[in-house]
Amino acid sequence: MKGTGIESAVPGIIASAHVRPGNSVLWIVNTNREDKTASVHIDAQKIGLDPGVAIQAYDAEDGKRYPVTGGVLTVPVPKRMWRAVRLSQPRLVGQKLAFVADFEQEVAATEAWGGRYPLGASLPVPVDGGKSGKGALIETPLSFSARHHVSGVEGAISLDVRLKDSGDGSLITVAGLTLGVNKGVLTLQGSGLAAAVSNVRTFVNDQKWHAVTLAWLGNEVWVSCDGSEVLTARLNAPLRLPGMGHGLEIRDEGVGIEPAQEVFGPIHAIIDNLRMGKPPPRINPAKTSFQESRSAASPTQSLGESFR
Image (cartoon, rainbow, N blue to C red; front, side):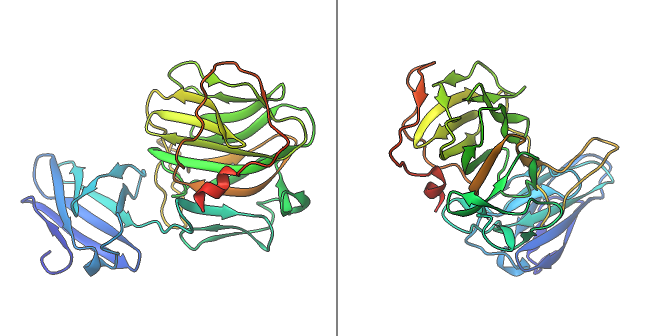
């Protein structure tokens, strides 16, 4: 509709919106008797969004992403049907950073959206012995809804971890990828990996603190430990992480849609300084396959710091 900030450019396509500061829901109706691709012009300022910040658009039912290019949203709509599309603008809490958890205070984690995860039955009570103050044990898996912390196209999860013993287990699991520890060595597994993982054997079972990052961009995925890239691989396709609503999850058991999760553990370890957001620049990429590496005792930059 003209003058509202939402205007359809395709005959027979009607667009309207429910708006509030920071996010909006568009209702796009195809009145034609044939399938159409809707092109909807968006005036960000008129619908309560920031014109200087990129807009994310995704299906309100199944989380599918839709492109917004040059202020124009493109959405396929079946004949005599409609689409509900959420528009949002994730706000970072630091450079490249969308999620923080230091486990120090009553609030366990703060999101870029302004939402918070209170400590309680769903999360472990912080324990002494973190890298800086308190940390979180992950002997029982610790889970967060992915929401908009990371996307299938790009993302990074960084944390400090100290194993309590030489036991094996999972450290980070997201979208079918699992970064784990096997016989003291970091490993990367997942059905979506296109080829063997290039591996610099990196031991983390020395009961010392290690800064670990799992990151991906498009079809590339890599793992860094204590300032060096130690695992690299290619994906068959970008990770599938459907976009969630602000503070909402999407579940449809009929078609198998489940809220995307980031899971930490189970492994006998304590974590601290958990960060999620956009991938940092790649540094010190692995050059030699199956080169044994034990982390030096000298302090190194935490990859979590590259988010700040």
